[in-house]
Amino acid sequence: MVEWYEQHEIGDGVVRITEPHVDPLLKANLWWLRGSDRDVVVDAGLGVVGLRQAIPQLFERDPLVVLTHAHLDHVGGAHEFSERVAHRSTAGILARGVPASLYGTELYEKLGIDTVGEDVPDLLISTLPHPEYDPGAYGVAPVTLTRGVEDGDKIDLGDRTLTVIHLPGHTMGCIALLEERTGVLYSGDTVYDGYLIDELPESDMPSYRQSMEFLAQVNVSAVHPGHGRSFDQTRLHELAQAYIRRTP
Image (cartoon, rainbow, N blue to C red; front, side):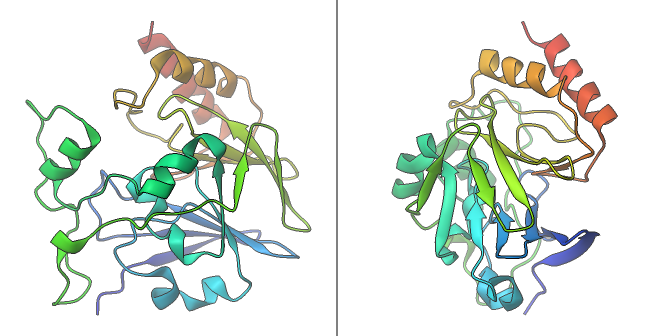
């Protein structure tokens, strides 16, 4: 059995969980925050290997999961949690089951992405979690939200509180979470240190630009993104300004 997940202690009760055997296109971060009253997990990975099976200690305090948006690499394990939170506009697609495949061409087709001229990976995982695993059987289970949130809503963990920020653009249901005590922003796919995807069928470039105009002014101590490494406020503002410059 392959060790599917890696855990990285960030400090201050925060753990970054990654899936090292996933193609960079779908290799997303899960963020585990420990509160005095309860824990929260931001995003739920691809769901190739069960989180309860691989990281049982994650569920010892019955955490809630907050989904930053409804894409397979962020919601694959959401059905394993007893409480599931996301922007209320995503409730329908999550309940139906998000488009999903581990085969690049098939996934692009399901997402409505034109693959002409694209170098599309064949299989989006670099190894099988176990020899009998069938990538063709992969799918994302439908998820019913226990709470739909809007901009400004609070998620209380006891000694830490997360404020929901609605940042549409990558999808119209994208949210970020700001822990105002520490100034840490959990940004999902709205911003990470790489090329920001705004050409999906559900993307909206004018909304994305407005979200970036907000992020270009916000004060944070650190950004923990949906993909890749964390970065500081200076880099956040650079990424936001770069997006603003390249869009109408």
